[in-house]
Length: 185
Image (cartoon, rainbow, N blue to C red):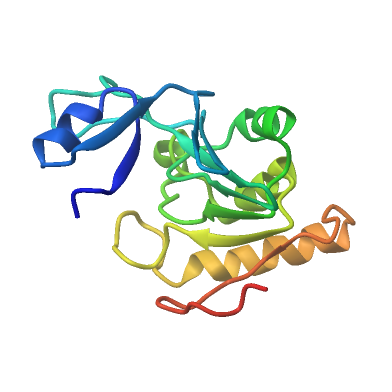
């Protein structure tokens, strides 16, 4: 599919081109690219990069805001918790839908810098201001010590607690089963 256009964080273009990609655009945080009526913005998130044992933090990592004239989608990707979500909302506005990670968080003292837990995912939902979110980055591969099925259970409990505290203003997570494509309206 030679006509696919790729948008990647700084430093990853060479790798994709080495794999045969022909239309690669590298982006720094806050760079925007317009494709027709769509605006793609690379956003900061808290993580690190590495593709081999010898290239730690030699490339950038990013989240993404994709804005159409009538809809905004935010993809947090891999991330630890930071104020980046509040800054992204202040600069780009709240998305209609967000993909927010909820897994690979234990042991906390090791994973906290690069992966949020379900409770922090609820905070990200509030910070970014999304109307709806889907949880990602859980239950597919055994990456860390938490049980595979635990993240959505903890997410439901954190959402209940935030709702009881009046912290969610009509916001919700739609927890899909693996492979499910419906449920988001």
